[in-house]
Length: 382
Ligand SMILES: Cc1cc2nc3c(=O)[nH]c(=O)nc-3n(C[C@H](O)[C@H](O)[C@H](O)COP(=O)(O)OP(=O)(O)OC[C@H]3O[C@@H](n4cnc5c(N)ncnc54)[C@H](O)[C@@H]3O)c2cc1C
Image (tube, rainbow, N blue to C red; front, side):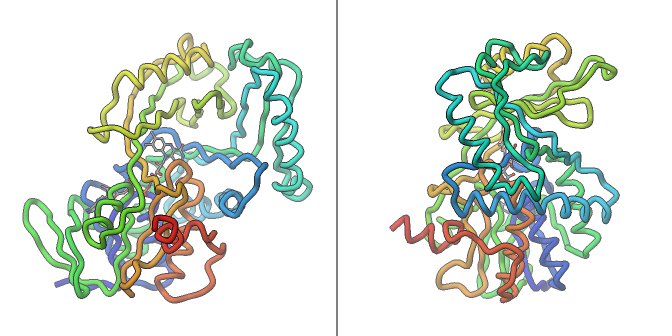
């Protein structure tokens, strides 16, 4: 029977990043994935990395902001080590201001960003532009009261990111077993199923990063119920003529993101569905999304062609924040899930914390907000 220091269940961005950080600090890691790496929620198309609005500030928003600041260094490390481009770029974001009552909030946010984002030192800010935004990218009547913009928002290609993370895992000696389902863990023995047959592995510690399916594992194994899967749908367009100017920023309006990528495609997302039966299908909700996106940004219809629709399920804790920590009563079983809509911007820092936590070290780069701790979730659920 093969024996490892740490077994990780689930190879999405949470599991892959954690495997890298743990392997970098010397652990012998096995990553068990029931499908293929990066095919769960992490294998989508949108890849928007959005800072929270700089008002009503709290620890969670502060953690996410620090993670956004450290992300380019992490991406450089991954890209330099693997030679694989992830499509990461700080494009900035534009938000139309169609109503009078939004002006006051827009000005407050712009002012707050100067302090909270430390504009003087970082150069990042939100700005309110009261003049109508004369751009061919946005329908003019959505910008009656101008636009908001920021230069911190970024995008990444989720699939290329997962491919690069997988490659880095392999380089670091992480053993990846795909198409292999984790079933149970007892006294360091892991029962799995591959090709219809069960077999055992051994690991001193276990980390559950199985996305939304972590919640059913927690329920079945420990009678802990802390979250659910929220389905999302999105679609992708490709420019008809690559020589034409391309959408230069992320566009957000009324729940819809339009995200330009560097491969001549533009992604649109996403729905949020609590009630679903099929995790990966798309339906009329996606059609509605398309209509709304074209209404906001008419050139999607005139200068681009739809090439893909995609559905996936995000892990969302009842308390909204990610849940990270040791399972009470078990010294060697840990969980890290619940990235919901912000996973791509924070998973590298969460992984850094998980690695320190599992190896008994105090000092991860960022301290975890209390609201991210599994214990805090469990207390609030009582
Ligand atoms: C439509 C949509 C748009 C999104 N847009 C964005 C965005 O713009 N920006 C952003 O930051 N986030 C976005 N998200 C959210 C983001 O994709 C998720 O939060 C993130 O991918 C979750 O990563 P994860 O590693 O926790 O889970 P996953 O990527 O789902 O990985 C979990 C893995 O565990 C495996 N697994 C499950 N059970 C087992 C088992 N028993 N044995 C072995 N393996 C198992 C699964 O097969 C899966 O591969 C979006 C999500 C959706 C659905």
